[in-house]
Length: 121
Image (cartoon, rainbow, N blue to C red; front, side, top):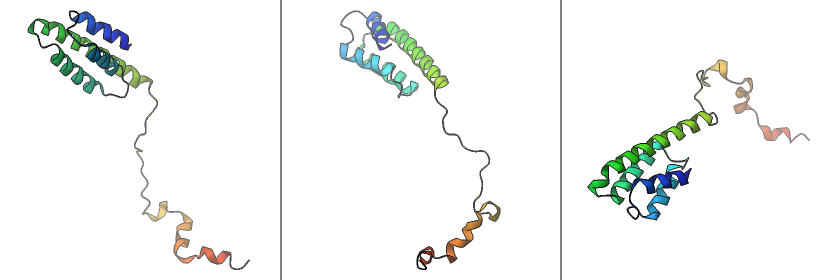
């Protein structure tokens, strides 16, 4: 998939317009599963605007950013659908300070000396 992103960037501009290091970085960033899609789009747009400042390439650059943004969001939504379930907040929270929810052995905590059990042996 990162090769596809690299080909899209190379095809959008004349040869030599964007450095190969930037192309590789953006290609890897666009397929990184740990990055938020909004951050990927923002960094891609900023780097391409910096790398391709010429006015004659602005429409190609904007079109490429829009296409890459759509691809990143699509892949992120697919990953979200296939992701494992996450932790959720429980609806019925038990208040442990109420006497009905407390354990029956909680009353022994203050009056029982557990070390005295071994003294008789």
